[in-house]
Length: 393
Ligand SMILES: *Cc1c(COP(=O)(O)O)cnc(C)c1O
Picture: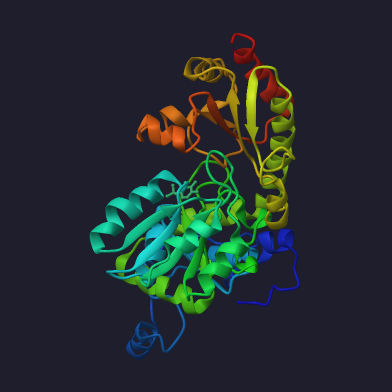
């Protein structure tokens, strides 16, 4: 891989990782092929053994996928990256590459729902156990450490309450005991937050969200130093949760506009959050870019802006929250996020609907809570859309 260390993120986003074929194509080529041809039996043997670099079989290498991996690695400031079929495949690959029966994970208690299911219902079957602790209390992480703890796993800001986990503090605690730290950087993307630069060992992504950013394909990735990603690559080569070349090509193009999209979305999110905070029908706003956020100061030390997710509580309960959702004509009613199209979700009855009302209340997910993933529409149009429901409650 070329040395990109002097380039700024917007340059890396459009240039890093490109490998041109003999045809000199300007845009990155899409290689739709499952296998690669060798010049001789001897070359085939060398490629299979790894003695000679080069593509063999698309379960573990494809030039389009490699271009995506190199570009994302450059943006994360990582030595290496392994792309996967989805964000969940990335988390699974990371865990099975680095953990074994008897190992223990300490994880944030406000992780993405499917990640909690993966740890509790799938990894647990292999004898890997998880303790969930307060997202915002480093002392709780330290107290949960056991001799067999091998991994701290976190995601910040949290969904939907945008609480901030202190990456530097948690990394210091973990590294004092030889524990790896993995950060799911889906919400901020490397444009707004670089966990590796703050000491984390590995970054995982759901590229499905902001990296594609246009709601088209699924993808994921694990980024970090080669000595750690190599194990993930070995797992992928054998187990096969591979990113397709087509999806890699879409994601490469997504990376090219990631910076301008997420910055525009975050700036709209701040305007929307500020407006919501002064709205008479709104009880409370959760957005790390607002001075009223309890961890605003910490957020400013580790992320470049508040990001593009805004949550708020309407005055009232489920009926009032649903009225706001149901009167939206522009905002899409969907739990997905990271799209150019703004989405609105009622967490208590969707993403967090399967947990008991008591557990939900303990987690701060009230019946009046709504989450907005801000897209690229005009903020005034989003406000007018929300006002339709506000005016009726
Ligand atoms: C969506 C999401 C995932 C899972 O990603 P998929 O691509 O849907 O498998 C993991 N973590 C976070 C924070 C997410 O938002």
